[in-house]
Amino acid sequence: MQPSKDLIRDFFLQQAELFTDEFYLDEKPKYGKNKDAMNWDELTTQVMSCTKCELSKTRTKVVFGCGKKDADLLFIGEAPGEKEDLQGEPFVGRAGQLLDKILAAIQLTRDQVFIANILKCRPPQNRTPHAGEIEQCEPYLVNQIDLIQPKLIVCLGLTAAKTLLRIESPLREMRDKIYTYHGVNVIVTYHPSALLRNPNLKKFAWEDFQKIQKIYKENRESI
Image (cartoon, rainbow, N blue to C red; front, side, top):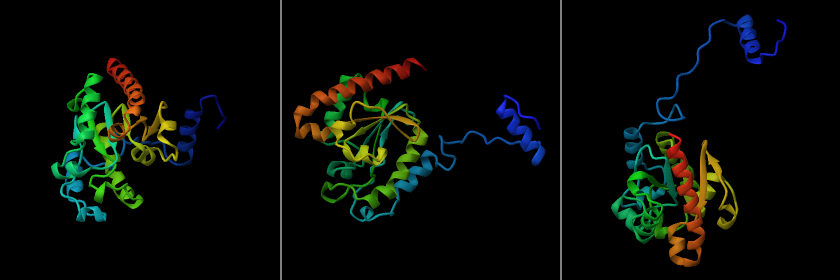
């Protein structure tokens, strides 16, 4: 076969000569980008009964996540705290109340976004998640992303950012950039609890959320 300028055509002609002239293209996966992803009911059932790590022995409730299941905007924190562990909902303590206020400032509510964590169970004394715990729990988060198919992910805090992006840098250096995780754009900003501890960080977080609002509106207008 003589080569031509159409490389795709040449490839299929070559395959037909060597093997077969019948080609089958995979259908679009039923759930998100990953053909092996579970649907919402399957995922919820598995997460709620998960015993993959030791946190299953100390948790009160699994914190699956909440919000709009096809949200354009996905917020990801580190792990449930004490109140989240008791109520089974993410960001319901003081940090969650601050997050609600920030969302209101950019004209959004919880019902319009999805909120999740790297871990679905609370680490004792709110310690930083261990690598093994993240390894066991992250696939659940990936499955949620496959189902939600957000236009933008916002990492709230350093643990979430380091887990998703595999970058070892201070959070201040990770801000004001756009990354990708499983094909989705990612922005990094401060966790609301950090803003409560250090109010001087609020001006930087507000800059980040103004950018988040701009990207969100642009995505909505492009639909």
